[in-house]
Image (cartoon, rainbow, N blue to C red; front, side):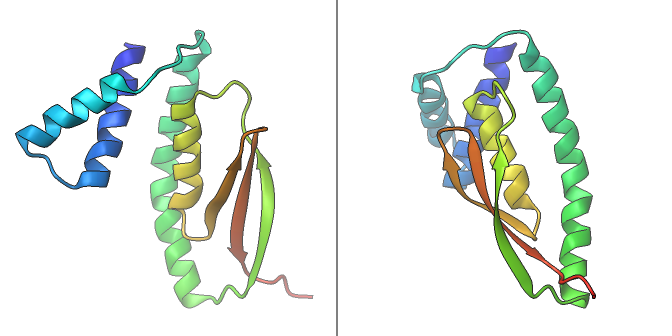
Length: 129
């Protein structure tokens, strides 16, 4: 089952990149998804995937709220922070973490550092004094 989730993630990325769901593109996408090397992990894999899917469900309304907030209340302060990658993350889960951070309008991942850090740019309102 782990392989199926990995394959679905890779195909989803392929279809998002190509924006083509024709039969030849599906065949090419499956071939590419199967040829990319994989790394298998321990049992905590399922728990991590379920948590990420829960975070995705929360991120969608959060993104809409942040978009409206930016439109109606100016955000003129920005900073760059380093966020720690959660321990023992597979490359697929790291990708989903980066996607979730970037999905919300107030944050974007500028760089992923191999030593386990994300460089995140944030836009926020200045606190009143």
